[in-house]
Amino acid sequence: MSKKVKVGVIGVGTHGENHLKSYAACADAELVAICDTNEELLAQRAQQYCVPQTFTSYSQMLQEADIEAVSLVLPDHLHREVAEAAFAAGKHVLLEKPMATSVPDAEAICQAWRRAGTKLMVNWSNRWMPGFAQTKAALDAGELGEPLYIYARLNNTIYVPTKMLAWAGNTKLPFWIMNHRLDIARWYAGCEAKRVTAVCRSRVLSEMGIDTPDFYQATVEFESGLVGNFESCWIMPNSLPWVVDSKFELICTHGYANVDSIQPSYIVASQTNEESRLSIGTPLMGEILGRPWGFVYSAICHFVECVRDDKQPLITGDDGLAMTKLLCAIVQAADSGEAVEL
Image: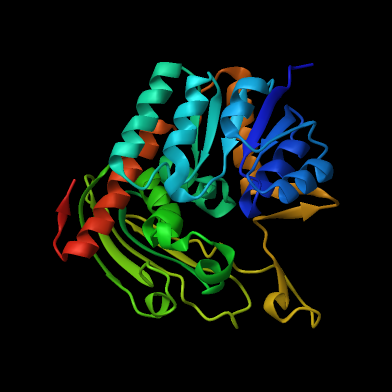
């Protein structure tokens, strides 16, 4: 029987719970410790997922808990300090995307990772969505030819920046959601971006006192010649039956792919709560008979497997740094109105 990887989770909010569910169900992981500043939520999660140790201080958890690896599931702008501490403590790290919201922070995280000599995986879990993974396999097999053009849209309803995230004003859409599709594009291109133009606009959220743009549009040119048009907004109306709106099209020299990843496989409507009136299931993630499954679970299990078997994760700190440079270039291009060369 293979040894289980002892893990901890820092940040047990909405997405942090997905990590808890995944580790609790992963046969090769043992969920040992969790950390959050919300003591009530911390106690609730510990009881729900049978976690023996709880901490309100991440530094205390990293020093005292008997763990080999840790998930960092924190607001976008808070990654650097905690990641550096985790590496200084000799831990393997699964870092939720984005790596950071500035290039200096991303570089510091990478330096700490290299000093530690442990694993770092940045969790762009959308690579484990079947449509995206199967398209990559078709590209690698030469079935589609060379990628030429990508159109990608990934939007949220206004629920996300106004009610789901208390810290929406501390991030921007390229860091929050657009990066998922940029990661897929970079994965398909097999090279780095070289030139970015972008626009953004601020009206709806700024009038609500939330200091972050309503939408971004970016055109990204890659070294291979691939061009991508990327759109993200988070002011879609809450009357939509889903929180995420997605579209992805890839045109190649010998083929085409269309990955519409958010189409529901079922819709259940309820009159008990107007704010969450629809429960939508997709073929991508969820629970079956009480066990998690899908792309989030698969990505986390991949990280556990890499720690257990001493393998390189599919997405490393080098990918995280390259993506941070691209994301910051998009923000810079939109702010300045000028193209940014990378």
